[in-house]
Amino acid sequence: MMSHTISKHTFRLAAAAFLAFILGSNAPGVFAAGKAPLRVGDSPPKIALTNLNGFAVRIPDDFRGKVLILHFWTGGCSSCREEMPAMEKLYGKYGRKGLVILAVNVGQRKETVQRLVKDLGVSYPVLLDQDRKTAGSYDVVGVPRTYMIDRKGVIRYKILGSASDEMLKKQILSLL
Image (cartoon, rainbow, N blue to C red; front, side, top):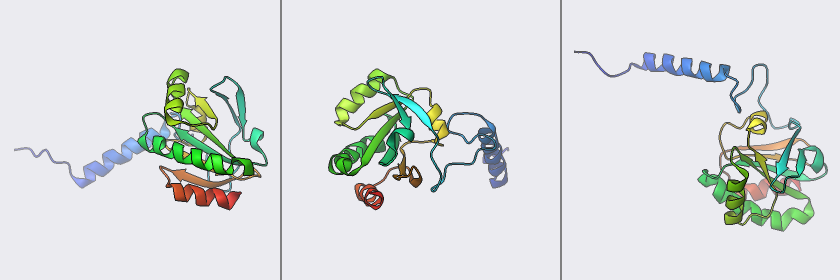
């Protein structure tokens, strides 16, 4: 009788082959050949996106001299929906001290994003990355992903996944 269990060796080989396939692809958010992932201390990629009012926003150029929080999210991400109101409180408290928060929605239609933003009660700018190219430039393979960029335009924090209110506040205060 033939066994239906997979040996550890076979599983590891299959996992390695899958990983090699994924890393070799040019899918948005997967590191392109020859491109190093963004690290703390790097300058962020220069990009332009439109906000919900249709105006172009240039990152990081439009925000030199400010502390910039770049938060990648989608409406289907429960952690994102929890973090955004917490960021709203921080934006209200520290916006006059030079804090700018930009929420970059990845891959959703403008009408959907507008409804989500209204439901979340967010007043900070929301940008659209419908083609996911910016997410790819910022190595976003999952959301939430948050970058904190200092007043000189240097990435100082990179958060993969969700962050507590207290952690966000501590990191923001260290940059203000």
